[in-house]
Length: 508
Image 1 (cartoon, rainbow, N blue to C red):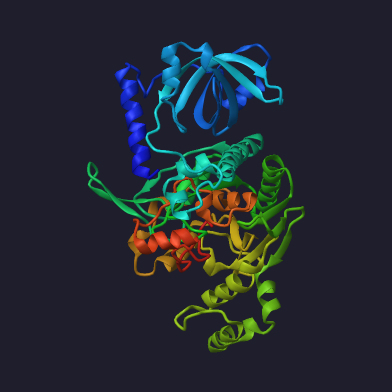
Image 2 (image 1 turned 45 degrees about the vertical axis):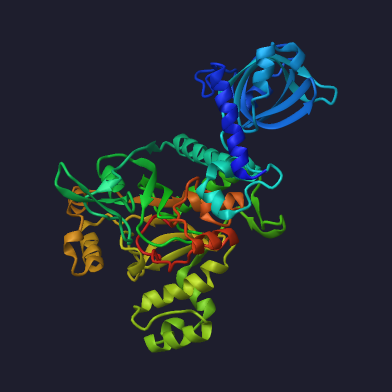
């Protein structure tokens, strides 16, 4: 039948239910738990109450077998039409795939060993006026999967599994940090000055205060105020917002972890992150060898998280590509980039040219974990300078699966040097300096280590997802157009220039 015919039939059934005085969009129904919990509590002959969406129906005349499902699983129910009242039997005929019902009955096991509920009574809880996606083919259209995530979750078990894993990952991160004495805090998401990273912010206006505000691009400067205030170990799982492009690794709003540890340094923070990610892999995924597969199920790569993870200096990684790199003039570097097939622009600063070489020839080619340490100070204005070489800072960038997953610093706590760094970064826009943060530093901030950890990218790595949109329940999308719909169906995404760079940010 055509879709319009199907919709009309469902609406007719709704009207027939309403004519019988049935509330087709019911209210409270007390259950004995989720479907997974009900299955776990199975005891032959015991009474049970369970609710869910109808996702399968096997009509055997007077005997009806129906699957009820929720995100935790499915359970079979058995309805004998002979055992129902005439009214209930007629009402059962008005049910459709996708409807929500609640049932009361008794546990039993079929001859094939299937855990089943023998229904004694049922109630319609919500009538679905549109059909579900085909259960055998799921939601194959990429555009539909992202725009109507609820259909993707209904039809695609792999998608449900990814988001359940994401929830577990966040839960385990909290537990890991709590066990090590960290305190969870919250800092403002609307800020008078967008600081803590180099990125274009979203702007808004507060009417009562008569002032412009920014959605935060990073929580770093507020978290450091808490170090000044005496908190020795803090973390925040937060939402950040950056008014820049999108790609398979970037979304305008994203989730990240930032954590600070007084009296620690970047090496201690690297050890902490290494232990954290390995703990997550073992508890959530069950292995330190993370397999990534394509849509056809073919193995494309394996990420080996076995400890210890490799560590290498930024300088050494660049000279491994070109031993003479740091002895070359700027024109020489530009010419060498042409030979290396790395796109750069003549107006770039020399450190930016070097960073472009690093991103294209080191970062994008690195699959197993690599800590890149001792970056140029121009790239990380909020980190402490190295005592032996003031041209570099004591930081790491953790690269996994061809992208930065976590930066970590020995935090700069000298208010004089910090002001100089921020002034150099601000240039003529001195009004963007966060004077309140600098004032806080002047009251004294202990030496500390700090980290950022991109939760979306972490989930991508651990679950094998190749697009950030596959691990964000409701990713941002362009308004639907013919061109955009074509791109989405083919799996293509609008491309962006990676404008975040590797600047002073704890958010990869």
